[in-house]
Amino acid sequence: AGSIANGINDRGQVVGYSSTTTSPGHAFLWENGVMTDLGTLGGAGSIANGINDRGQVVGYSVTTAGSEHAFLWENGVMTDLGTLGGPVSFASGINDRGQVVGNSLTTADSTHAFLWENGVMTDLGTLDGEDISAAYGINARGQVVGDSLSITGSGTFHAFLWKPR
Image (cartoon, rainbow, N blue to C red; front, side):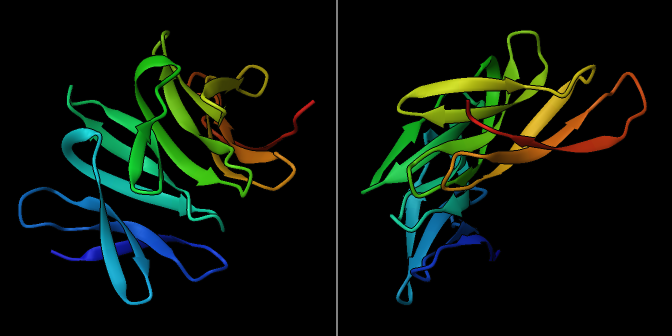
């Protein structure tokens, strides 16, 4: 039993996950001494990873089907962000414009970084010749940072900076 904090914004709002009496853990928002359970996408548990200054929270949750999906929580509502065609996605960061980044399994069963904006999840691909990628942060200009890896080659992670066109 316990709780873990994963993110904080400039307003002092904290997000993470905490044990509950009936499930493995739920995402929470802590503000002014009060911890609010953000719920799930219908499954047993959820984890919050990031929060912007507007109070929008991102993370991932178990769905009613039992898979894990990235979510965006705001104003008491948790929205499933979907996937890149595979069964799993995870949200890691969000900027003040509401752009979300993370990673998802693709239809080819490969993990790719994504950018989610206005209901659309965009595959950011991988660095040339590499197999998998993940995005962890996004700034106000929409620039995304993460890493990419060749699992069939050197096995070395390479940091990337992705810029919008």
